[in-house]
Image (cartoon, rainbow, N blue to C red; front, side, top):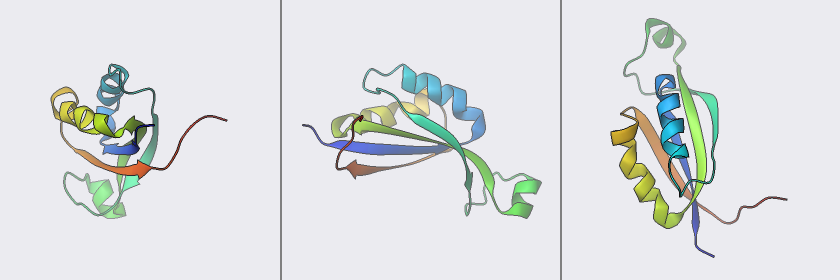
Length: 98
């Protein structure tokens, strides 16, 4: 069994459709989960309301990939989706359906 990684992408809401379309077009992506989150900390490109509340609306995507596919998926993000994407990936000890 090849090693797997969970890739997490946090994006601006206006990129949600582009990122969904990109991920769905990739053979190595079997599926993903997305949900709204709030970003805290980085104070770039915040609206006045976001500056006051100290949080920014973001959309988070999570997907499990073969470790060798992570760099390929990341490589196409800027070209197919755009900027303002924060990512991280972690080793997965197991996954499956019950």
